[in-house]
Image (tube, rainbow, N blue to C red; front, top):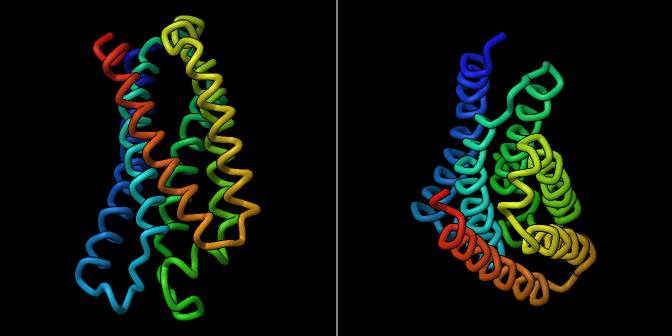
Amino acid sequence: METEPVFLHIRVVMGIILGLSITTLLKGLAQIIEHPQRRGCSALHLCWVMWTLVSLVTFWWWEFRLVEVHRWTFETYLFVITYSATWFLLCALLFPDDLRDYGSYGHYLMQRRRWIFGVIAILTLLDLVDTAIKGGSRWRLLGDAYPLHTALMLIVAALGWHLRSARMQLVLAAATLAYQLAYFAAEYFTIGSD
């Protein structure tokens, strides 16, 4: 089977899932803007929403590198779709349909932090497999910063899982968002044009 038609098919399915993910985030943000008191606006929650949006948009951009995969199998297809679906799961967790049991997004995030940070850890590990699928050239392109980034994100996930203080969670969220913005800015300025 030719690589290009298979990748086109996979790209369409992946685009639908990732499009729904971004839609979930933007719709949730719009609802907060419309009814900030009803939704319990929270700086902690907004930091993780922005981190997810930045990470999701850059993930979608870098998935173009899948065009370099020379042999697609059902297992590879299933992995890519599962990886994309995991991003959707994170977005859905960040914006639940019903907050009545929690009162606000901040309280919700603190109560469901183990699920949210568990998914972030899984996404970090899935990225290792995704990078391997793209081949050795992708590993070389990312350089030494990539293993460090992976380790830092796993540490962030572990800290987020365990921290019970909302104040410490906010420090972690703000630092992680700032780091993610800096990491991706550095990545785009050095290898984004490749």
